[in-house]
Image (cartoon, rainbow, N blue to C red):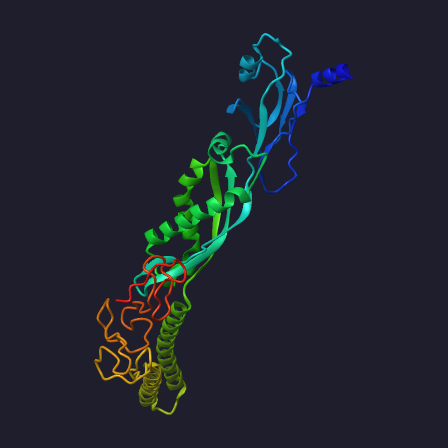
Length: 374
């Protein structure tokens, strides 16, 4: 039995990894105490793989795709290992790790907490974003040294959390550097994707990785800002329609005058033009009156009591009142969430994380930061 075991250990061994998974980054070839990598064993490395030999805790050699015969004539590090008194048939005491170098696509990323964005129209606003990204191992040796460690298997999920954090950091930098208005965010997803990839590539490379692509699927703003954007868009459409309506009425008047054979062409033309312009102006004036914001009656934001004009404090409960925008000085009405002139937010936010605060909150509900209500 002992002789059979000895002969079995002397048999040539084929080392290979048939990867049938979709999320395995690193796989250690299983070698027990009875297994021996003998001189002249075969090493098979398939496309999309790299094999690394670890000897005494150090990376001894890296093999790209191909089939190799492990012999001292063509494997440099084996020469040193096998130049021992035991001779040419000594077993190789080494570990073999396979690293997948294929692309891992469709990885999800997103902002767990809002990112503060400084906007020229709406002031400081909180945005959220999400999308997908792809990556692969570019430098297997560096990845093993910086990230992997000594586990038997290493999956994509084991590194995803760190990569998502790097992407969110890159997104924050890209938003700050672009200085794009909140109104134009939706039209700039492709530019943001390219900028995020540029900002993040250095951090990926330090881990032996490469980001092969990233897609920004959505960037969202708070509901109050969305409503303000909708109002601006509505006003812009109405202004354009008024100009188009006036031009249409004038064109109709010209056509009617050309078809009139009664001899009063010029008079008809003048009346038609005047009517068209007058109707357009009347319609525009009516809409302007309708869209004109109604004057708000000043009331206390805390107890609802009526306030005198220019009152700094509520006469009933003593609550401090906003009189003017701290940014541009425009007059405000009680309950305004944004300045009607410059768009500065009047909503109290945490100075540390930017979370919107409830009235009279003493601590931030997100990060626990003490709120300065002075």
